[in-house]
Length: 402
Ligand code: AMP
Ligand code: MG
Picture 1 (spheres, protein in one colour):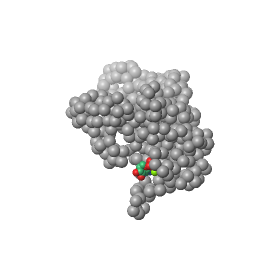
Picture 2 (cartoon, helix red, strand yellow):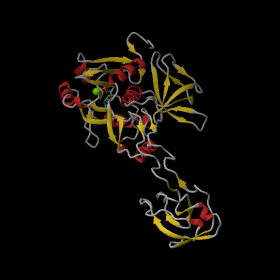
Picture 3 (cartoon, protein in one colour):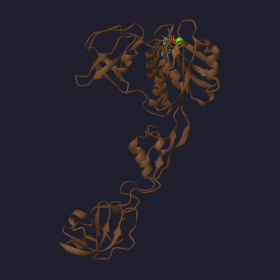
Picture 4 (tube, protein in one colour):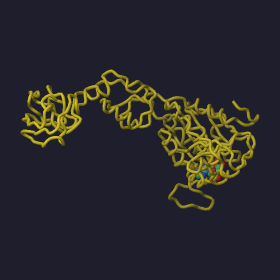
């Protein structure tokens, strides 16, 4: 752990604290269609083979390869096998059965001649080109044998993994469930989007942003309507809802001013407030209230969102069982000089351009109210605590926001 100063908490220490508080979510059996992006909790063993039976890889005619060794040859067509139906009769020597892609191969057949190599006849077919035994036949268990472990616990379920599970007949899967996060903004100056602003008021933006960030990280978010800087109102909003959640995520009301509602409501009640050695996002709080994990983010929108990226997202990813909890990073060249406060990790917003030789350009200044600059950014530029100045062309660590 990096000790930055007696009064500041290191970024890594606060990150660990939040991850420890959030912990891991339990296992749930969820419908396959709801499992995208979730982590498989148990090994998945194939209850059926894939394919489950020998079937045709082509639209054409099921034959014995020996019967089409000399071509052209005419064969009587004795059956018609669409996908979804089994052949009603075995294939007799010297005959053909019309067969569609995916339909079960009739007993006695050892190859399929594609329709393009025939005259397409329905009562009798002329075969113009021969095929070897096994041609255009997909054998049972070619892909997966019964009892094979197809996906191991810990696998992140993407489209292909969900497709495989469905192909094996799984209607639901054992997964690590999504953490449930209650998002609450605070501030007497806040007004809901769509309402009329009175002097001194601003539109509330952190709630929508943080709830979206929770969902993007894979969690479930419930956005409570914001509360004014009033401890009683804050508690009344939080307490009845809290037990249903894994994490309460607040924004605002934690800095050094008066009317710091989150601080006032939680100080001495299981939540500790600290200053983390970072810019933006210094004022942070973490703990447990009524048994539920609490993380309190600062109110400035950029501080809130950067804090989410640095502390909350990795904790939610870990809670869901992801092995990789951090966003991908690259080292890039800074397009223009930067200054950064001593003793604090600075997270500047930037745009990364891989085309122009891996250059990153800072977007907007360090101000934590510059929300439009954040919205134009695709990465954070991490300037270490001990670095106060960087020249254009310096190597910097870039952490993607996607
Ligand atoms: P605070 O941490 O409550 O002192 O808030 C710091 C700054 O962020 C103030 O300018 C607030 O108006 C602003 N702010 C706090 N919460 C929100 C929010 N939910 N949406 C937009 N701005 C906010
Ligand atoms: Mg406030």
